[in-house]
Amino acid sequence: MTSSIAVLSKNGFEIMDLKGSSSTVIPLKDNRLTPLLQRYETCRPIGIFRTHDDGFLLCYSQVGVYVNKKGIPSRSECIIEWEGTAESVAFHAPYVLLFDPRFIEIRHVETGRLSQIVMGQDVRCVWDGRGHSLNTTAMAATSSEDEMVQEAHVHAVLNHPEPTPPPSGRMRPIVQHVFELIPTIPLYLPGSLSSPSVTYFPQSDSFSPPRSPQLRPSTSYVP
Image (cartoon, rainbow, N blue to C red; front, side, top):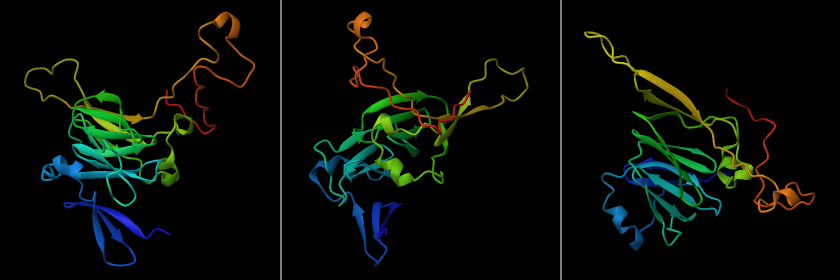
């Protein structure tokens, strides 16, 4: 049974004990977080996500911080600088999606590495996946492409540029494009690529390069 919850407040991330009235603000003080402490006034908390090592990625509007389950910074390079200023964040394992009005910044939750940037105008997240029928705890524990769920958990909207200006005297209409965000599946050819005429389709269980993830029976495709 869960005995604590995380609350996002003006003080940061507060871990509140459900069995008592105490609360702890994380991340705990650490010399590596000195640059972050100086930016608290403009750097607000927007989301917290579990990592595969039983830790957490704390997402602020401008940076991310890796901590362990006790709230202590857990990595030598524990701070990640975002490319922009996120107004909101969503999660589709194993990716964190940060929504800046100019683009969507997609990073791997385990490494913090930048995977993709989706450009747009007035980009906003309209559904971050909460309330989905799948178990969110299981989703958070997914860290490999083999276990990616190919269902839309995140919906977004952006302004679509008008191809031609309106006639004089008429108001310019705002055209919006609503879309789903689904992780792409890396595809690899089986066998060695160095000698396709000999070992293109091997009969053994070895694969080089690594095999492609298996598609789930429940996979749905959007035309």
